[in-house]
Image (cartoon, rainbow, N blue to C red; front, side):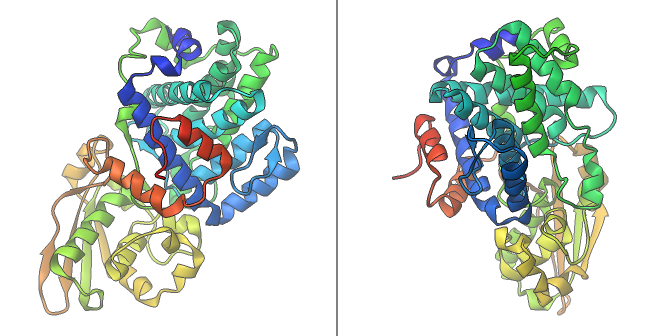
Length: 418
């Protein structure tokens, strides 16, 4: 059943509501990759791809250069996750789209796939990646970054695009699972660096696994595929794309509930950030462990709790410009970070990761105290504003689309506005 779904799903088979969801996810991917071009890591990844993966098979979305299939998968995977602005799934605590779409785009260009095949492959990739992530976290006590399971989804998408047989497809998924990065992501959360969620590596490994398997390179079996074959499969019945969240803010998802709570509180009470004496944030342990104080790098700004809250209270917003080095000289925001206290709320901790919650208290120098509602991150799967968040990001960053993404969006179920 697993291989049948991977290799035989067509875009015409995909239910209309699923294809529409895929269209929105592609719009979100387009927005975050275009926004991510300002991040230093994106330039470094593109240069690495051009020098170490030379070729003419696929496009680097950072600047339009042509490189080898693996180079494009790598560079575009890094680009898609450069601002931590990309889609995610609560139960795998990571980002499928930044692994799946870059790898699928690169292979589709290399083999001259039709857009219908590419869209079907991306759908396959999402469904396999999320299941592989849930399976990995059930088997492993360590929290692995997205590349550890995203590579399996990327390999599945590639197998669909290359029309390889089921034997070679099994080897492709086995290779991807075997060689996927272990990526202990909490180390990169505690000490933020360009390692991040290893999405570039997931895309690279997935693409490499398919290209090798297509030529006869063999692998040990995939634990995920073996278990999926033994279980009663819900592939094609339950669609995990409906469980994906999208991001309103360019930073770690764990800080989003508190950012949203702070923004709502500021707006509701017309708070003047110059009059704030103290801020208290109640949240879950993973969010409480995020960085404190003034950031020194783009990654530190993304993996912070107090910095985005300080910016939100000072400027009524937290956007891409606030995770770039030019923002770190904001004296008022830096001073506000020192007034923010964080504590773990037992109820919020017990709800994590199924639900991410926070509550913010702002005390002003005149002695007033303002308490926010218990707040969930915007853009969760059941958020009525889900599509609006995607539209706002797309409208803000996708004024000029690269030809490849423009064509892809026009063939998907959601087209860019005229």
